[in-house]
Image (cartoon, rainbow, N blue to C red; front, side, top):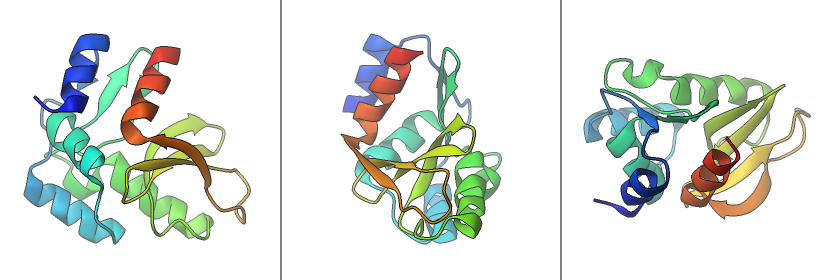
Length: 138
């Protein structure tokens, strides 16, 4: 059991997960589609869970059925059309009202301001820390 899986099981045992998490091959296809390699924590999240939902929170993910049509890939590519400077990130959460949370190749998390010209703002936490924070607030 990896660290993220253990944390979710111990703290958020009733979290929703995908019944069809992606294979490593599907993750590689998604990485090609978004143009960069996912970090270790994000890859572990995807291969273990596909996506996570807890309470009213549902984080983006990839599943083996939808593959590159999954919300993580589609939303990332869509956001890049409107927000400049998002090429090195993938969208992991939608806070609503045009606010998105992004993750970089080093698993660090950023908030994307609603303003199309403002670059992502570092949240000074990695993806695992973000999951705990977000689910604790749910």
